[in-house]
Image (cartoon, rainbow, N blue to C red):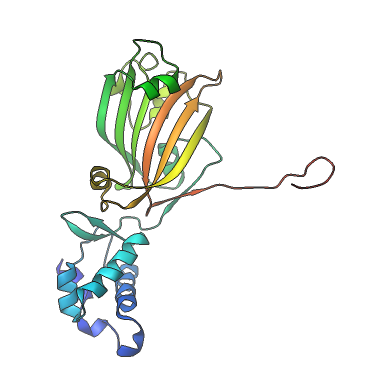
Length: 259
């Protein structure tokens, strides 16, 4: 923390002609990250301390920090403070191919990991029974996990599969799709529904962001080659860390025209 405080020496803050105070503070923090004076996961002094050191208002400090959090440069952990984001670059995922989170992160040179929150066999909800086409009395394997890349929380997922398809939930490692493939039932296609949501207090705590922070909510139903639904997953992806990209093309229609 001593090195972090040195970043906010009044002499480093620039002159009066350097622009609005909050932009000058943003530039100061970004410069310190760029040249290595602030490193990934370093804690910043509190708003009050920064304001006192630079002789500016806490409102100005809060504005600068809020902007940097929204840009993915900083992250705020409730009860802990403000930290430099680990791997500040956002992850970009294309939606044109069905891949697992583990495969996506490895393809980007990131190290995927899982923090398991729940592994259990339980009765399905009516929605799960309908989606998975379960018979009366069937049970599901219910999985809830935090997905991380280079130890940075990225997504909170809850997945269910029919219990008859995977004998032992404890045998599932980092990748559910790897377990399904080992059982000879890897999905070949999926339907996804995406929407924007604000995180509730509990989900935000697990993801290391503030309550109400933006997230991308995704429901996915994955299917086998014969058309049977095999997986039903609900996920919240951090809005400050993830971008989903869809490539759109125009196709030549018969007769030479376009719609």
